[in-house]
Length: 362
Image (cartoon, one colour):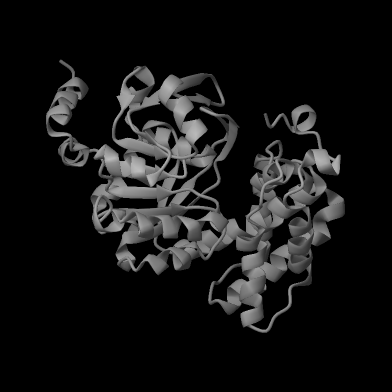
């Protein structure tokens, strides 16, 4: 009998996964917001055996009902840079009530929702009563775009050591319900304080490395977070406005605009006591644009599909901080206004972009 099958027999008798998982060196994980990035995280944090037809037990997914139902039925299908595979999860939830009924007790909850959805997530968690029950001892990792997320999540009144943040530059596309596509590998950076014990860091490190993905735990995480924010502040709005892939950032005609965005962001970062070098930040933006030249940014995808964007937590966040310091950011302010004017109007209404023909989003 394999160790996995042996463990399953114990679980079926006990119905408590987390205690058994601890004994086997695993961590029980809930992915809250299993869309493109969230579903990919579900795969990355699962045991390698998941690709051999075994059911993944230590990672539970919580996401849209149609996506969860498809994964329950056929598994999560992932198209990698080379080849594809499908992975079956024992627990796929479409609501917190589903989680409550399941008996699944996560040690860590990885939150991967859109930034503008985070206040609603906080309300749902409060109203569910899970913070005093199933999630009473859980840690929370916010792996999201933008900034200001920890401040929002702290409204739940959790002890500071239970909340940490992370960033990732992985390119993942949501193809259709039950299916995602990895468009580009990139490093994931988590706060070193993700857990007070080394065990959680070891778990993340081991899982990522097993699957050939880079992960780093940063003590000076704020610097990494600002670098990612600046990249997003350049690439996301420009691609959303121009309906072009990331490589447009390298266009000679846009260089003065790109430089202005970076300079304005650096000015605000310095007022926030974050020491960044302007030339290095600019070079980093260009490097990311070059490496992801054929990718379609998340903000452009949102625009084409008529969804709300995350402009308020990216460029809007920088503008908000600037006002606190008495600064004006004309370029970032203009980008915010332009993107907001396009929200809720998909490619059909605008008649400017054709995702099926040009971007192959679907």
